[in-house]
Length: 113
Length: 115
Image 1 (cartoon, each protein chain N blue to C red):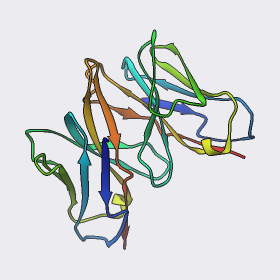
Image 2: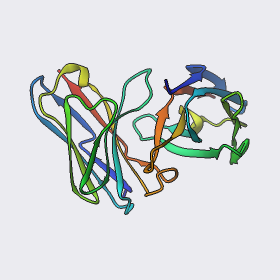
Image 3: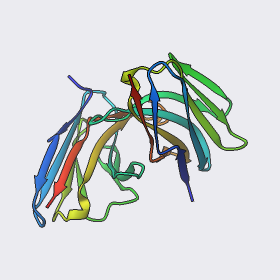
Image 4: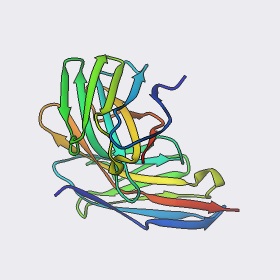
């Protein structure tokens, strides 16, 4: 099994719908992150969490929300999806030092029509 | 502004040939520089991590260099294989308060190895 598992792998949704992307990890890491990848751009940080009670906005958090249900689970929600949220979304984890040991999931390809 | 720029955007080489990918950055305060390989449909996987004091690091056929004075890095791939076809992403880690670091990602270089 993968260390960081994202579900679903692919999703097509309509504008205005609420959608949740889920991430679970078996690394035992405290820190979890959600990134977005668009063609021709580097990954950009949406939200991050250093432990279950800690949630922080990244550089592009507008239109997104997150929930850290447990140390191993971190979900990303789009409350009302819009077409420019079409992108590849990655969950990642790291250990407390954060300088080493980043592990990425395989990604969720989201299309908003 | 913290930025990481990579060149070329894309590259096609013949199997068995060598290639070098470039990365320039303006990120501070600098913590470390990483190269990741991202296969199509997969998440990035770390190839090398270099701190300020390291100027060369190898991982099999991959060799990364770092010049912290000029803020440049390169990734050299030797004797390329078809499986090297992927996007190669340069990532610079900036110290971020007392909690660790913040990663700044380049857009990647798409490498295609042809037989």
